[in-house]
Length: 487
Image 1: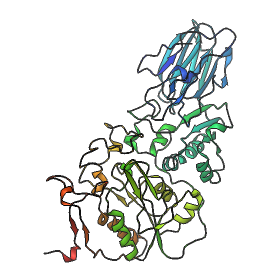
Image 2 (image 1 turned 90 degrees about the vertical axis):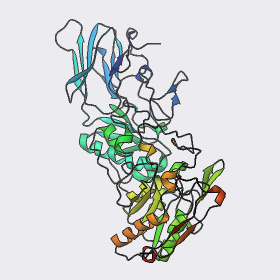
Image 3 (image 1 turned 30 degrees about the vertical axis):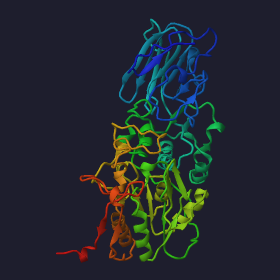
Image 4 (image 1 turned 120 degrees about the vertical axis):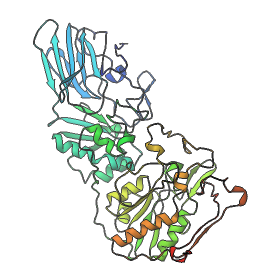
């Protein structure tokens, strides 16, 4: 087994032991420079150890570089810059061609030299036979006409909708041939709208010898190996633009729109379920209040979540009983055909809100665990600044995807999930009124007081927030129409 001479914090690594004479069957670069901070759940490498470079969705790089240079030198840009030198007496450099900075240089008897950085950089190589003044091999990355593989996670909806359009921007910018790997349901969503891109699942990659490979995902703990900027600083979807080195301005994805309307009455679609409790609207009366108002405004309210009930342990979230149950494991295209004719959509920071965004309908997005920069731009973003908020985008916190009840600051206290408990039904209704006016409809007034009760023994102590907890606990709050308040 080969060892590395990598020093923590350097920009590349080199294998000290040369490859065997007459062959290039050295250890894969993914085993040479493992990194500790990948945000992807780890898979196992050939030795049975967790390998953060090859997560459950990622396609591992070829065992040897795919491009052939002179003197038996091999190179490519799969998981960063990879250079494999045959036995000899060499001096090699990896260069950031955009800046001209030499990011790694070494003398080598042969073997692997790989960059630490795995996101897009304009890499260049120079190799000398030791003692000679002129390089015997030079190459600057040129993606035009080249095969590029971009790996996306499987089993996620919102992330992919936000990330995928950057692959098309990358293809247009570089004139390369792109293959994208992702889950089959997302492939069905995109393949007809992006005919210049090849789609495949991770286990059925069509091109096994790409010139370059990039992995799109969320990388935690301040990682700057797989992403140039911590995703928490730039937004969930825009991180893909930074990883690929293209303009990070958000892009609305192309969906197949223009279906025949199925429901003639005015209606609104809502989605109330999420993958973890911190994403929910944890105000126990919120949805009930909003749905009652929507019905007064003349709307049918269709709940289009996959699951009517979702949760873990002692907490189970049910769709609002006042909404029409349109839940089920329904093809995404069918969901699009329903959403695109809705007057607007109300949802959380989860996948169906991103789907609605792609359908180009107004989206009221309710979220407290994330900051508004995290999701797509919508003028109807609902959040509260009266308590803790934005833990997902806090660089001092690290999201635990295995903890369904993650709340890094106030878990198991009266303040747990106050970020959305403090978002009231009235606050969301105010955004509903704005949407209705924007689409040319006059909204009804908010003229019904809302009584919210909780048992006295469950009322919070003085100084505690008064929002709804997951278990529905709430001190008495009376919302009185402004017109009826004392002057």
